[in-house]
Length: 572
Image 1 (cartoon, one colour):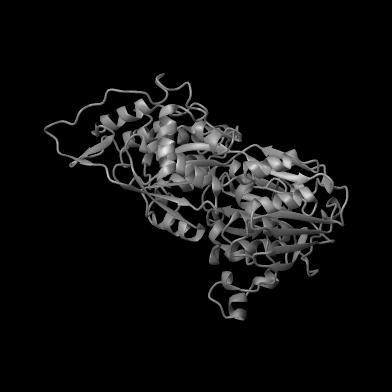
Image 2 (cartoon, helix red, strand yellow; image 1 turned 45 degrees about the vertical axis):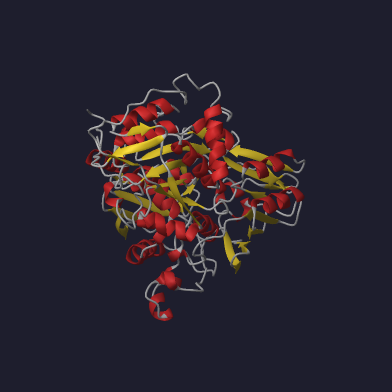
């Protein structure tokens, strides 16, 4: 971060000139003067040195970048200093998984299946995912937490499962492996002269999903829907190798999953399955819709369903590994009914796994490694894109666009009021919004505040603030000193003015956060956990309780410093 900007942030914090600080100074909620403990003459101290902070570049994620700049400035107010590593997405991801940082800022994606907060709670904090190349980016480890989150994942009773989710959030709040900052709203817009009647789905992918696309009513144009986006899909078009949400939603047009979601995130029988039955905690019977065909005219069979899951289990799909993991085997128990046998109870198998993993045609994919002389089907460079979805991918220009034509034999074909949909990739959101306003594109998503306001102020577009199920946070590498101390992490949490981030980074289009589960997720959000409201005095006091001292504005740490508490049980 440029020094002049850091200096400005420090002066602004002291003066109380940022929104959210005024009125807090001297009240116990903000800064203000405070008596600090002098260094103990019998203790040898050293100045606290700079810590590495990992963040995405402004171009890749403006909100992450801006939150990083401001939170660094806030933590500098209590004596920390940082060496910032700003990377583009590829290097950022590699560094993140290598755990080569002291602090990182990132968040959970805003896709509808996250209403079942399996990723937010299980893969982000379970001990088995600590360490290099795994998704527990804080390296947080707790047997108490592992038990709670395993119970959450396996509990089939809704109320009991919610109670376990609440307990998980309580443990996280007490131990602060992350400081949760904001729940940014999903800012989306569509042109009202081309299509109306939209019923947006909760989350970021409000329009570009099979359920919402059926609600669009054509008002003009030529029967082509254009999604204006600046997010190119990763590892597309091979389904077996994709690595991001963009590809997931593109594949949902080309391939049918067994289960679809309604706009509120509830599983519905609008996919390839006409119904399903939970036989017991590890057995689910799914009945395939009758009369389905692949894009090439071949019938879709239960054998295709069983092949898909065995094939995915054998070869793996990077982005869907957790969805596939609970699967053990499948068998045919009727003319069109497939029985899924799970290795262990998993409450998310229907709303997550059966929603995200579609059906692949066995006659296309079986034996493809031998035919193409490849080690893994994910290496198939120009895959046959035959699917059974409502649209068929007919043209892919990397970095430019993906074109889909309606599959006229699909069971929902008549419900789509257009014949073609284009995923059009733009260099910037500003250009994308301009085309939506001008009628050269139908809708867009993932907007920043300025571009969203442009759409809102226009006469030809409707701008919508969709409820957020995302969460941004500052992540501490709990293996590294001094962030292996709960007191230090709590101090950092108190030093971050979340209200200021909402107002300055998100222009008010966000909520302050205290949990990985957003308030919009009413079933699982625990509103009673500690929020760590902005309080610089409390932050400094906690650092002193951990053994740190101040010499003027300089933060000192005992040379032989040891963490005061590495874990706090919620049962103590």
